Image 1 (cartoon, rainbow, N blue to C red):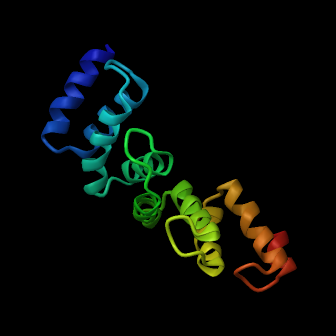
Image 2: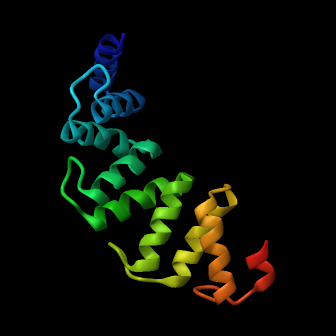
Length: 151
């Protein structure tokens, strides 16, 4: 029963359980057992993110990137992507690297972008593998290295 699951998640979320805060936020994001409400989802993702729950950090970053339920804020998106990236979330590592590649919410820095694409690529994140290979092929932010590009 989706409504009962949401009720129980809310009880645990009110007690500060990060996983419950995240799960309840996701229910509001999709409208599962509760009304769909982007602002309420973002409000609930925040305390889970502040407790260091990496998936909440990533999800809240994306909400700031696109202005979904919160104001569009590139600097806050980058800050939250960095926190999730430091916890090993490959998509966050990739998104933070892309922000450095283009200078979105952070200074543009090809070397930092390449450094950040690497851990996502090493986790098997295909977009990061492709982007890092291209950076080695063209020497963007890293030394030109055809062997590394082909790897």
